[in-house]
Image (tube, rainbow, N blue to C red):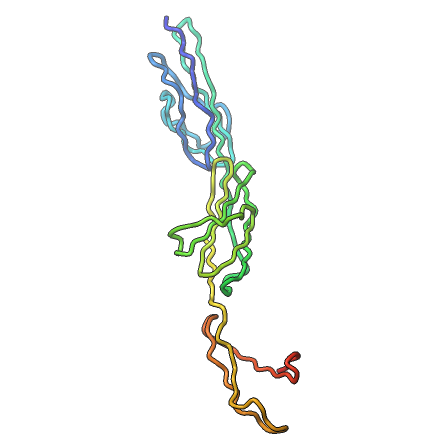
Length: 231
């Protein structure tokens, strides 16, 4: 009789919170093979075609490890042989970002707060990116590899963080920061620079400012010595 073929259930697999996976057993040739589940939650798990070496299994859930056995049946008097494969289905990675600064002046350094990630394998690598074309292209924030980040903004920009863990990754929400031009063109002038005591000076004229959001509030101050100013 033909000796039993040595079974190979394929390499162990790390999954990213997947509900299905494809097993990678070897071809039993003229013999028969069968998959069985021997460890991990069994409720809802289904082996689509147990006799196929490359069948699909469904009903998996993140945060669990499943073990499947590939058995090749030997023709009598040869014994059956088997090999096991583990599927580690990692929990989904949580990843959100926020900032207390949503509208700033150009040139402002903003602090970007990243949530403490969970899921994956418990070890995380953070990548921060920005986009100035509304998310069409993204560039890496150089030197920003921590849970949170800082960035100098000069124009309207989107930020995001990608968290990598155990071969899996999760992209955060996109955080918009609106940027306003710095205030400019704030100067004053007067038709008179010297007046007699108790005499009203000429009209003081202020320029029309630019920058900001286009709505301006004014506060006039005076000083007898050019040092201490009061309203």
